[in-house]
Structure formats: C-alpha cells, structure tokens
Image (cartoon, rainbow over all chains, first blue to last red; front, side):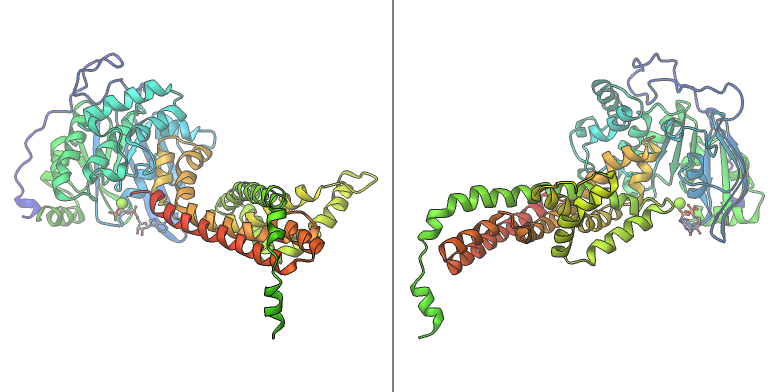
Length: 286
Length: 236
Ligand SMILES: Nc1ncnc2c1ncn2[C@@H]1O[C@H](COP(=O)(O)OP(=O)(O)OP(=O)(O)O)[C@@H](O)[C@H]1O
Ligand SMILES: [Mg+2]
C-alpha cells in the first residue's frame, strides 16, 4: 500500500478530559486518580526550541523545534537512528544537549538551577525494555520512588501502586517479581509505576517494539485509555494504528531533524516531505 | 629408614588435644574476626572506590585507579610490615605529637587488610556495577531518584547480589591471607599453632594440623559459595 492510496482518516474525537475525580475517588477503570498538578497556566507543556546535540563530531539532533500542549498526544516516528530516543531523553534531561532550550511546564531542563530529580519525578517515562527493577517485587517497584522521591508513607504508596496495578489488570501479580511476568505484563507495570508519581506528562520510547506481537495490544490499550483520559503524551512508536486512533499530531524525524510536524489527518492524508511518504509506505506495507 | 618415617612414628597428637582451646578460642577467633571485619570494611571501601572510578567526574577516577594499581602491585607482607612500623611515625608527623602514635597490632592489621582488600573488592564491585544494564539507572533517574538513591536502592543491591559469590571467594582468599599477620607476632590461628609448636617442640604435628584446618574450612566454604551461587541469581 502506498501513502497516496491510503484511506482517508476518519475524524477521531479529541481525547476526552478525564472525569473530574477527587484524589483517590476516581471511578474504577481510570488511570488518572489525581489531576496532575500543573503550575504553568499558559504556554505548552513541553517546548523544544532549536535543540541540537552532538556525540563528539557526530550530530544526532539538528535544530529541533516543536512543542506539546496540555492534553495533547504527539507521536514521534522515523527510521532507526534518526534521533527519536535521543530527542525524547533530552526532554527529561536523561541526555544533555549542547544547543537550544527545552522547557517542561515552564521549567528549563538544562538550567543548572533546576532541581532535576523533582522535574523528572513529574515526567513519567516508559522504556522499550521496561526497565523494571528485577530485584524488587512488583509492589516495591511501584512504591519505591513514591516513597523516596515524593516522601509518601509506605502504606499510602503501596495502596496507590496497588490501585494502579488493578487498573492495568495485574492486581493478582503484586507479590511477584518482574522476571515472573510476561513482557506485556511488565510493560503495563512500568506504565503503572510511572503513573504512580502523578506525572504531568508521559514519555514513551517504543513501548511495544520489544514485545511479542500478541502482547502489543494489551499495552496499547492502556496507552489509548491514558490518552482518552487527557494525559499529555509524547510517544515514540511505529504503531501507526495507535497514532491514527489517539494522536493529535505526528512528528517525523530523519537524520536528527524534525522533517515533518503535522496534525494527524494531514500527516496520514498527504505528508509533505518525500522522506515521510517513503517511510509511511514502507511501514504501512507490512 | 628415612627421617620422615622416624618422625611419623614419633607423632604425638596429644599436643593438639591439650591445646585446642587456645588454638580455636584465641587463634581462630582472632582470624575469623579479622577476616569478617576486613571483608566488611574492604567491601564498603572497595564499593566507594569503584563508584569513584565509574563516576565520570574529573580526577576521582584517576585517583581510584592509581590506588588500586598501587595496592595490587605490592606484596601483602610488605604492606602489613610497613604499615605496622611506619604508621605510628606518619601519625606522629601528621598531628605533630612528640611520640609515635600507638596503633595496636590488631588495629594495624585490620586497617592494613581493609585498605589492601579494598583494592581487590573494588575491582569486583566495578565489574558488578558495570554488569547492570544502563537502562536501570536511566529508569531510576527518570523516576526522580538522585544518584545516591539510585545507587543505594537499585544499582548496588543488584551489583552486590550478582557479585556475591565472587566477593565470598575473595573473602576465602582473605581468610588465608590473614595468616600473614604472623610477621607482627600476633596470635591468629597460625600464630597460636606455631607458638605451641615451638613451646612443645611439636612442629610437624602442629603445622600438619593447621594445614588440615585451613584446608577444611576453605574447602567447605567454597562448596557453600557454589551452592549459594545458584540461589542468589536474579531472574531477569
Ligand atoms: N551514546 C552514544 N554515542 C554515540 N552515538 C550515539 C549514542 N547514542 C546514540 N547514538 C547515535 O545517535 C543516533 C540516534 O540514536 P537514537 O537512539 O536517538 O535513534 P532512534 O531514532 O531512537 O533509533 P531506533 O529506532 O533504532 O531506536 C544513532 O545514529 C546512534 O547510533
Ligand atoms: Mg530509539
């Protein structure tokens, strides 16, 4: 299938805002029990402004500029090695960058005065290889950072972890260790672990690409629900079905540059750049 | 007939029966205490050195590396010896007191073994830390854990568990090495055995017995380590 022959994208309703639930009283089935505490009232949640990054002489990112507004779901795609992971890791300062600026909820991530652990605790991140802590039980995986970073009491942290575990359908596995779960289950725990910190935004780096095909769906379902509840999300993925379903915008990267940054309908309908067209046709043909 | 046989025919093992309390309650107790304390101190210091080495900060890695290489290129006996005789004077020089600082033989040997073994333990812990996938510290950072929280709760517990069999094997080597404190005339197990041997003129019996005891303890400990190895592995 070529991109020009693609069926028109049916208009998908904007992600609905989550029901206004008071902390801890959210209806069963919601992932966001608390409204994320956002401080900036105006401006985008994530602003990436003219960011460039080098590994030695090799330039990984070239003048990347984009933004993600509150409640928006932005999918980042592009060929392997195009810098998607690097860009998303710059957002929570897991990777430093040499030029440009990134702000999250109004806070500059590269500012020396920024309290990075505090900022990072408000930005959830889900990794390709889950990165659960294998020496800790699922319960401890979910409660450790709540206790150490947010200072929540043990009982409260564990209750919160358990509630989220129930939402992702894994309550019965609380006492197990990560190695005893399947990949899809581990990734759902990883999402719950990030949500337990009450993040204001969630970053996903190819959350389904290390999974066996039959487990992709269960993880995407959780992500779709999260998007529908109004979470601000930046998602690196090649799952175009997910992008069509919940994304507001799609960013296409190639060789460290943001080649295309378009509304979803526009991106899937008629990508402007040739590189994006080629990429789309290749990825959609199998 | 050979001298050997004549000696064996004169074997008198009653010397062991008469002295076993002294050998074990004085000698072995000292050996085990020194081994345990030096192992704990060595692992703690070694872990800090390994963290310095991997810190990526300026200067610290070079300092750590120089320390490890220096310690590993010295014979342990020399370190024990020099430390015992030199440190009182170094201490005197540092705090500018009138007389050499008195460091007891036990404290001196404990400090020596801790500093010496730290070099070896640091290499083990360095390998252990490096064996943890990069994604683990990334995930810890992404959750907002600080460097020390991440080390304390995520990286070191895994590294320690992965390396526990190797650390224990190194501790068995340390157990044997503690016998070198005889140069300070300390009554460790070997020291106690040799004192009895000299006093009663029963050199062969005592040294044979000491060898058997060292062998038995190390052999059994190695077996236990191997069994433990299978049980502590983290499932990924
Ligand atoms: N630590 C590093 N040192 C040097 N080069 C690196 C490093 N990390 C990544 N790179 C290079 O930077 C480029 C971008 O890497 P990145 O992981 O961001 O790509 P990606 O778009 O996420 O690719 P993939 O789809 O394979 O995950 C690649 O060419 C990669 O080889
Ligand atoms: Mg990547």
